[in-house]
Length: 256
Image (cartoon, rainbow, N blue to C red):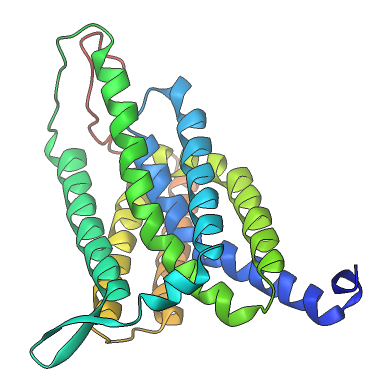
């Protein structure tokens, strides 16, 4: 109870919650793009499970702070540069984001479609693969989030509460963001470009080349602002052309 009466604790909680939400923006984008490959009726469940995995992963890492901080110890050396466990996770996660974003751009623009011949197999396999991919990248995003939390607050209880509130806020925002991204192909391409940028930043972090996140978020915000102006201008045109429809994988019944 003494902790609840401490204004410093509340200040740390509010600040950390805001930071967790900001750091979770790229996670929301990634989840929104992945669940966009699912049938419409499965997308809300996919978003909820994905963000719930993110919350569970972050809480588990917070409860094992000693192990997380131990990841900073060098495992091996490459060209005179020490590579720690954290660096391996960041580099691996960055490469995964680069590969996944490039493949998503290819599938969206090149029209690659795959059909599944087993009845009902397409939906189940796709849903499972989406959840697995979300779980993999959640580990990378959670690592960055947890390290930030450790530096911002002294009490594990405050960190966990901030993470839970932030994830609940992201669950509230994920639906509208996902629907908006799915309706506007140019926004989706921008989002995939952001993920490539985030992947490069993660790889840079893994090799001890720090790219300030402010630059990354400014580029994302500026690009979205420009595209929002473009969308408003198109709506005011006398003839509103239909946007380009990005391809999606279809099952045998033609259901996206």
